[in-house]
Image 1: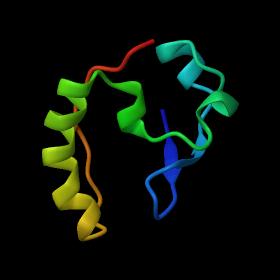
Image 2: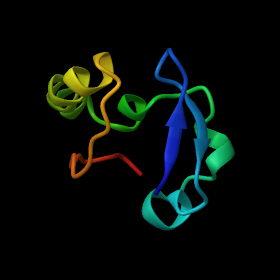
Image 3: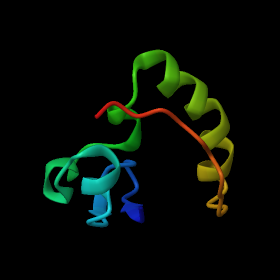
Image 4: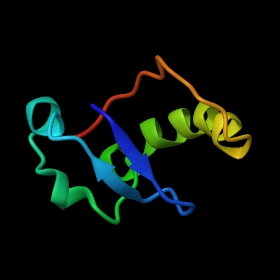
Amino acid sequence: MVWEFDENSCFTYVSPQIRNLLGYDPSELMGLNAFDLMDPDEAERVHEHFDSFAKKYLPFKNLININRS
């Protein structure tokens, strides 16, 4: 899945692959952010790791998280 988000961490693009992974249509996710797709405890855990990359505008990979479908 490929995604892009704006300065408020809201999705501006989500690839069609999201349908196969989580069952969402890309248009359903516009205006939401990645943390909206996670249970609160998971969102907090992932945010701790993701925040350090995002604040510095650094690329990242292999950040594994559990999403709700």
